[in-house]
Image (cartoon, rainbow, N blue to C red):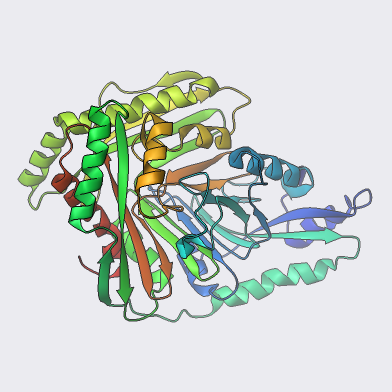
Length: 463
């Protein structure tokens, strides 16, 4: 990785050509500040220019949108998928030029995610466009950060490269971004079809509860899915806009793969790395919001004092601590959870902060943390085996890690819950719940029904 002075695109390219003499070609990350345009508008206006991606953190101060794929990193066959991506990214960066002292979220940024299991069932074509892991370096990326807007272009140059031609690409892209947007309307729900009848759900949960009481498991997280058919194609940009508006305090993400789009608004951070600081979170234990302030406070109090939910929550806190301990110098974890309120749900929440050892990367931590007991269960391997054998569908990227990382391996990954897979006018939505020995199948069924609500609302439907 070589840094060049942060100047105009022309100057960056001229500096880059000086490094080609001893190399056949070189990767370049070109960054230019531009007049403000939102990441959402970038996403909307670049439709049909390639697969798109979008990311916004819960505070809204980091927004990234990308289009096209300059590089796609997928796990090499037979290798650990997280370490395979890490090695490929390190190899790319060795031959990459980027502006020095780049702003956060600019320069080479990988965006993507990983499936819940370490494999995807190829006999189920729901996830046909998605690999077990894929991180994408966009051809074009727009970043909103700290009140500034940056346009980044990734390309490869060699001794024959026409510098003016590449610089002109920025002019052409700005013309695309200056065009007016075409407003479209959200579709109307035509039908909904659940994978489970309640009877099938009850039988599965009772089987899980029996396994827990027989001490084969301590906890397992089970999911169900519903297919929703709409009267016309689902407009992704408008769905993003609704998620941002309605699902406050959430990560909003989209990743397109061919004709499919994985989209969601999740409240749950898996891990964030800034320098040597790790930030993670335990978000386990759920209830609805009240219709009045008094009802809301009562529901929150009940959640804070519910033995089943506190037990489930503590599983996750202890697992996070144990999982990342080999990479950590010291921890800072509160003794008790607090309430984390969302638009239609509220959760038990415990933040986890730690100081990392010097050789740790965010991909090491993602591997260690995924899946947390809030999404898999305990013991992890036995819970995953139960899910793999008993759930009648492939989770794909649902509940997997999704996020971004930069040239310094700083970045952030969320847990892809409150999510769905969209194909033209159909959405497949997912929701899960933690099962312990005292779980009630009817109550857990109701919890998953509530968890479908955020995505249904964003899509314009009602349950």
